[in-house]
Image 1 (spheres, rainbow, N blue to C red):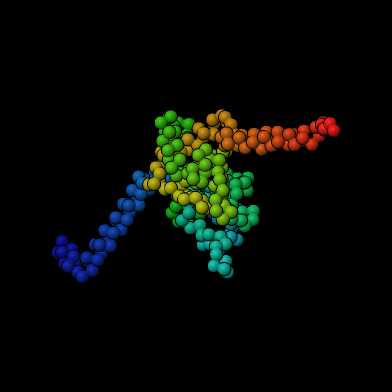
Image 2: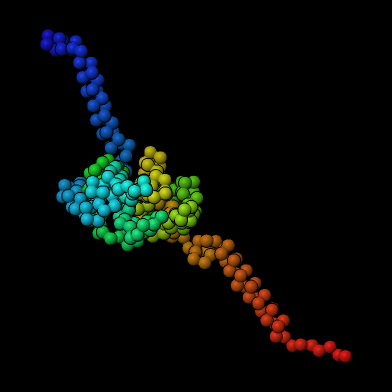
Length: 279
């Protein structure tokens, strides 16, 4: 006791206690953030060291040429970004980009289009595990937040409110997509899986803004997905191609219908019987 009483008067005792307090606070915050603040993106499957090692091998072969050997990114001579750094993007971003076929890109363009994926689901999971091991980031969402079929009518209505407020400016009110400046576009959401829709909201790929679980809760993300799927299941009541409304039908009626009548009237005038006047 005398030794402890003597050492607490040491000039380094105060900074040491402060350092221990900061370390303890950081540990508590990390646990709370993982378990409470981000419950929807907690890893449900245990990622093994073998998955990380296999993902690293896949990364070095198919991704390092653009993103760097250590995923640090590669800058161009003009100061641009040939391949962005992937440290801290999380498993959800990799699962979205690779799972939708956007990565690897077939050719450089303003926006990576969706296409058939080049990697299997297992390979995609391994790539995601490797990138996730490089730094903390959004994880693949839990299945319970992807079960949009469990949403009630009230949940779908609430999801529609969120969608119309935050998404219709780019994706259209029914998720049909639309053009954006600089040659970019908001893709249509028809046929997109619930997991990829959730990950797009969570990670904000390309020009899309990201909506963390603190901005839009996991439950509300599920409600947005339920609204999108509910709209896609509705029958098409008009518009060529569906869901574009009567405006398209009106254009076709005006151009084809009225235009055809005008041309027919001109033809009659040009080929009708000529009436000779009596002298």
